[in-house]
Length: 248
Image (cartoon, rainbow, N blue to C red):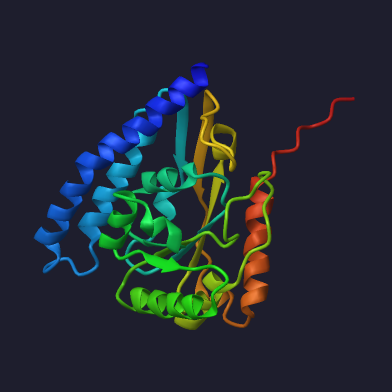
């Protein structure tokens, strides 16, 4: 019963805060759109909005590691494992500029989805070739305009916490536009909120860890499939728990 009450309080706070913050986002967008073409100020505000939900929840201990490895001077494609709905609000704690590439359904969510449109995040309808092609076109344009992108290459949340195969879209973009790939590790979110259901699971530690970027020079001779496989193997290796020394 305690978890249900806690969950209702969390989702209620998200709804009420969104009712307050979305109008602020609209005003900020209108006030800065002529001088801030890439809507960096709006995205920074959205990072604050998303971060409220981890800051305000005493049951969650959040650790952010490796933020200093992000080079904000150049467009980058961030890729991460995907465990839970909480991954998105956790990533906002990085407070770095990027455009989400996200499924079309998310843009239809009242208030939050509307804010995604204000931010010019990039929608894609999975399984629809025309939508995927449009997403690739929009992503290339966004990179050329100086924006980074954030993509979950698994495509959707893992149902069991195990890392699944990577789709090649992010890696096609990196090869075509010669931009770095920056792997990011997410830990602990599936324990706090599993894929199926909306009941928060009590006290949990969660973390985001930024790994070293992979420069274009290191993968220019690879195919997108090879690059996707290599990046997945890197993330999988880093996600493995450390091996404890045996005692004789």
